[in-house]
Image 1 (spheres, rainbow, N blue to C red):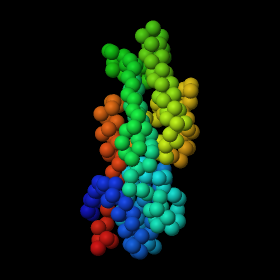
Image 2: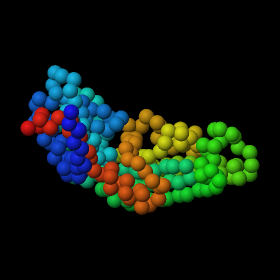
Image 3: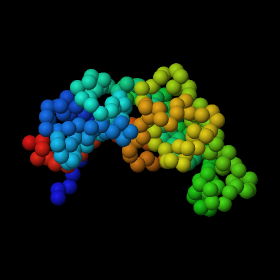
Image 4: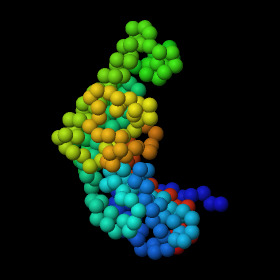
Length: 229
């Protein structure tokens, strides 16, 4: 069995793909708004032949139906405004973007790791609990980071009303972010949310720029090239 062929596409290449896709009449299209991708299946058979993941700043994908021609008209030649934030224990980087360019950005770091073990105190707490003053300081710093991120997000959301909210954050910290005060300016099921599908290094402005370049591209995986010939 041949290995799938994967290609990374520019913003404009993705738009051209979307225009051409409906012409493949033997393909049945489905969407996965949560994972932000379009899948092509051989009509009448359970055989997936391709997966297309658009750039993350594209509008939220619709559900099932004859969507491609209608959805195509919602995708402009440049990204609509969006927020991108990268969150790890002790570090965060975030930006508000217009046409793919950072208009506002902020990077934050806090001391939250035990020097002897290299693990964030917030994870250590789950196993042994807090005790010493250093532990409490690290936990307070992590809480302060949650608060600072949510405050900045609230300011940007109220002033600019971005079309997408794109993020990288592990499940543990994601849950804690919603427990912080103030809370994030959106709920967990906000349709504008999109999770970054790339490995993220320690967040700073350079990493924010790198991830932004990646999310402005799409990915096309072809499982059966013969169907396209």
